[in-house]
Length: 273
Image (cartoon, rainbow, N blue to C red; front, side):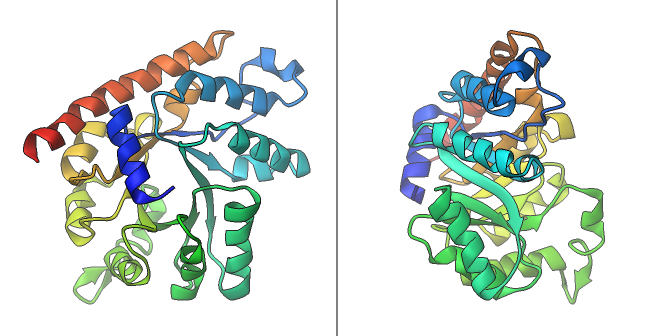
């Protein structure tokens, strides 16, 4: 999916919601455990319930890799079930170099046909650029994350700027707003406006709303640009909104609340443009 298609989808749906399919078999409703593939049965119901309210799905590969070959099969079934025209993210956080990075890119872009994959830039340019060589595919580079450990490296000063700023600035030289996004944690609101000034045209993938306490209003007011420029991810707050037989209804209601709030913020772009 290219940038124009993504922006068009956001405007059409009046949503920049990304639903995280970080599905833990130990947390899904117990009545699904009798299915041959319980995780896929859960994901299928969540997708059916939310596919008209979101613009993206993010699959955290760790929740599938831990199940071995069956997990990879579930991942493939899930990404193939997502309707065409919805942006797909492999949240794999790959961070190797050279030929290895290229093989990782082929895994997610060719074998599984994701639109994007998250990447860790610690090893530098050659850990990111192999993911940027694929037509109408995206690398989503870790910028500033929400976890406590972000203080260890990302928020350390390097000369007159934070390390995360140096990383984002370098990423902007490697990729363009058409093939590179940045992960910016929802709870890092103190830095969001500065990051938007640093990268005015790039999309941000923003995890951390809902269960992690990030504020959709703050994120939108501080980081939205003329094209929206945001994919705000909610995982647990949507997929585990209910745990009974009607869990998908509860998930839809939770997703609808986000979409309706997002519609209000998107209307401000139209008013101000």
